[in-house]
Image (cartoon, helix red, strand yellow):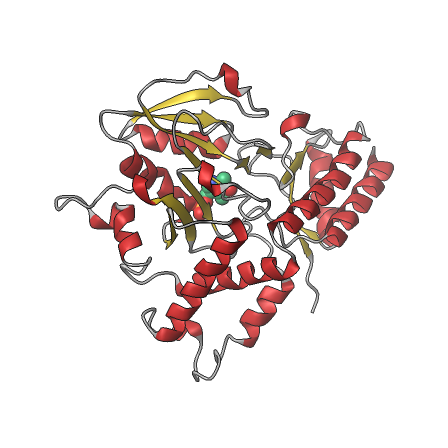
Length: 356
Ligand SMILES: *Cc1c(COP(=O)(O)O)cnc(C)c1O
């Protein structure tokens, strides 16, 4: 069996150990006589899986009792709607820092039902917070910690002083320590750095959750999901289970600090190759470049296609940039190894020597 070096942006590479455990347990989980997917989510076995995964996540990020931890359906995109619906009111506004594709989409979705105000709008860098056009009467300040398309990352988070921070951490969740107590809500689709598609983790401050009103749609209120421990209806049981395995793996590797060190090292060698060449061009301001998604362009279309083809032949997969922006994107999530990145760097230098 040949596992390639996989730089997919999401759904993305999983640690071999996570897949091996899932494989070992796929047909028969423990002594049940069937898999974990083939039974009630309300069984004691699944509830154990669910509780263990939440407890592990709480430990990994130091999440205290002021917060609910929810395992929801609907992807990160459903949160674009639930956040304004639950945390903003018809009489307040919400602030959005647009630093790329995903925050822009989130802001547009919010504008359908609430007053959502863009405090900044950039694409390849992050304007200083002091220059943001803040408004009064704001329910929260929304931002995307890592913009996955171009690879623009907040290395320092906005100030939590004025209004609760709400953050889409989908593409850098569990890649560094985060002081959760500075946030109102953090969410992440699992399929980038914490599992497979189908489950979205929402960490929300209890006091921000509105009580349920009888005339509203219960499914769309965080309070419902909190009250039923994310089992108001059938959760994505297998995806939830895989996230639990992923959390265990991070603990075993040494925690989010170790993930952070590895990401720094992986991205540094890759950016060094890009910066040391006139052939590869990074579109992002140096101080905001992502350690998770490294993007660059080749001199022309023909070279671009050659690059992808030769990379694939060299066992380096899924390097094509997002269709909106083109170019090359190497995603260096938790499961991507230093060996994979070193192999990519060698390939890039060799490719440049031959074509540059
Ligand atoms: C991938 C991604 C999303 C979209 O996730 P879905 O699960 O497809 O809804 C949203 N935000 C960010 C930052 C992402 O990387």
